[in-house]
Amino acid sequence: ICLKNKGRTISGYLYDIHGRVADEQTPENIAIGTENGDTIKRLIEINRDVLWDETGLIKLLQEQGYTTNPLKKSQKESTKYNGGYIINYNDCLSAKNGLQRIQLEIDRPYRKEPPLRDKLILHLTWNMLIMGSRYLNS
Image 1 (tube, rainbow, N blue to C red):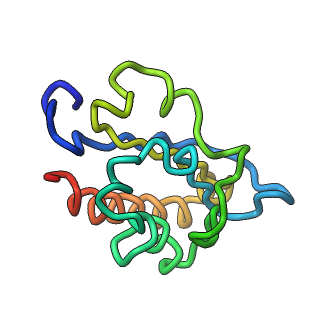
Image 2: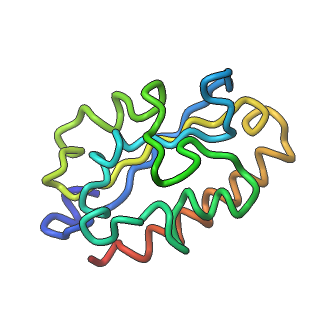
């Protein structure tokens, strides 16, 4: 992705999707991590509301009935789920290459129960395409 799109502001997207078990501190269905915006800097330069406007990943997920962490734009990401090894430690992933990285931590029922999982897969795929296509040619 980085090599094929070298020189573009946004060279592509990496979604690092993991499972987790909700707890008292983060009871939401999906925790989203971007190191509080550090791994999507170029998207934020284009649109500071990139995750929250009408095509934003968080906004779309919430409209589809999921609870998210963060729950609102003014809230910081959970320090427990705000990013990890995959979105932080790889030469291709450095900010200068334009690859925008988002970590998604999915609560257990949405991974283990087929009707919930299938619906989430459809929603995530659609939402990634909507948000991603808006900025990919920037």
